[in-house]
Image 1 (cartoon, rainbow, N blue to C red):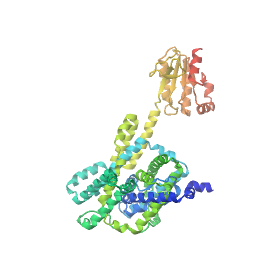
Image 2 (cartoon, rainbow, N blue to C red):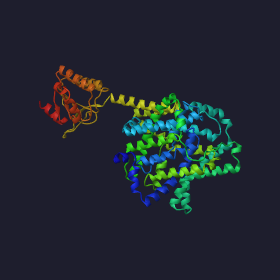
Image 3 (tube, rainbow, N blue to C red):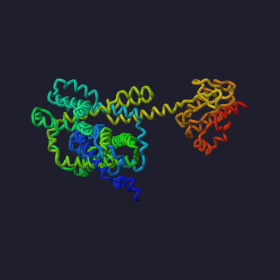
Image 4 (cartoon, rainbow, N blue to C red):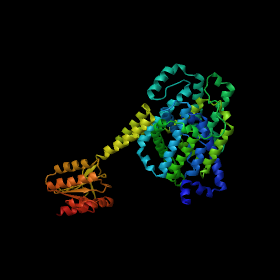
Length: 574
């Protein structure tokens, strides 16, 4: 029982090892991460179509739950751009943006994501995330980054634009080009320039000015928050809000309440419509979370429990939903900051939640004059890690099938919607895999002189025997490629009159299903009718076990040899 509790709540293990030194390190790391997270959580809340304060809500109880259930001491949990844009796209299809129904549906989506991650973690179903291949994820993330940029440009330009898809966005941008709001554009563009300059030169400049490396690094990481404070001050002093600059406005002060009443008010039809997006967001969240967590664990020579991580992120999303926030996930940039700032245990995540709670209790009135253009600029500057066009060239060089799935996912996501794009990519990857698997590489092999090795006759100078045909099958045999194997054997045999033996080298065959077994029996029969014997070589143990459970070996006209060289030597001497 104690072990089961420890599996679900690793805090029972790491809390016992806390020391004064580790707590001091966690406090420092938490302070740095909080400085980075405050502007991000406000910006990503608006990106999700939610009130800015829900960004703080999404960074309090969810972080507490993750810290209690997670195994990574440095994973940066909370609002993230990709989840916010997926949330607003999914909920926007069933509710009017900005309405109470929209906010309730957004919170319900977070609950659904949390429940699915908890179930997947409890059942150890992390393998389903393997259906999201790297090219599909890359195409989806790049297109999502462009959609995020499209959704934030209206806040920077000061005009209303249709950002649902690329064509409507470009059309509305053309029509509104003459109505740009100069002050808003100046604030948004100025913020982007300042953030870019801080990222590029601030740390170096501070070090040259004599500031210690630790202090220079802290100021650089806090630059977005400092820019936000400066923008608030300028807006208040110069009266920019009265001149048409859109600001955040009043933000409720205090800790979040529970949103059970609004959650149960969501109609069954809306719940049904949100199920598929919730599954996709849960899968994407897990893939991103594990890749970040494992990367950070490798740097620190630690290990993580993938099932526990899935359950922890499920609990975090469930907490986000019941406090009226939106779906959360892992952030690579915040994880790196938390690692570099010296976090030693998940207590650093708990402390971040406490600091953000204090912000919600005492400092939200100060955010009234925060320009939306500043938050939008903050999001736009963070998109560099999402948009990667060079990946298209890489996938083209590696595999044309991967490139097709990559490009198709990108195109559908950008021109249709996020859910359709991701689903199209998953289906395309599976179809491409089946198509490639249905045409396995089958090589005619010969002996490399002076060795017992056998290689492809088209690639190497090898020796073959006129009465013996060696065929190497480079893939497991199953229903999709069984007929292809029959055709290739028949084609190779037809080109070689006087053939007496065919040897299938099965070193790469890891499995044989019922359809493939039927095809092998058909090959045995057809070759026997031609006076040709079929043999097998280098059959793996699990495959041989399966063959022994059937009567195939009784029908096999030839023998099963331990090595291909033994087969060729014995048959040549016959």
